[in-house]
Length: 186
Image (cartoon, rainbow, N blue to C red):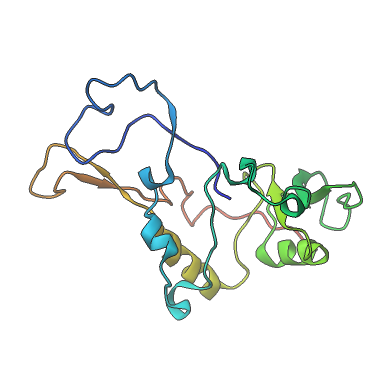
């Protein structure tokens, strides 16, 4: 389930100053997923050899939909960052899992393996939760997929180079590879 996406600029098919003229749009606002993501790309079957496994997604309001079956609504576990290492995190709280900061994909798989019957695993935050893949090939495939998912914001005054579009770079805020990643020992 995607988080709500807060936007400062509206997306529309003609040049505008960020808010569609003659509307009363207050900023910032929760915008539709297609302001940032290419939903058609996310729904498309991409080759696993190049893009890794398919990622299912839902709009942020999915869990609040009154049509959501009761068995889904009542089958939720909350994942929270905990102090300590992998083995010292408190995994016994009802409805809550403790996960250490900077967990790798293998650590998360191990941690969540006993919750296979749970319908919704909710992360209170993704900040410091996921530290990357243990396998570089898996990471590259995931990154390839994510790069396909982002969209363009339209429209700027066209120039020869940009045709009036800005393409979102989902990795714009990453630290340079030269910064050493912290590791957690299981």
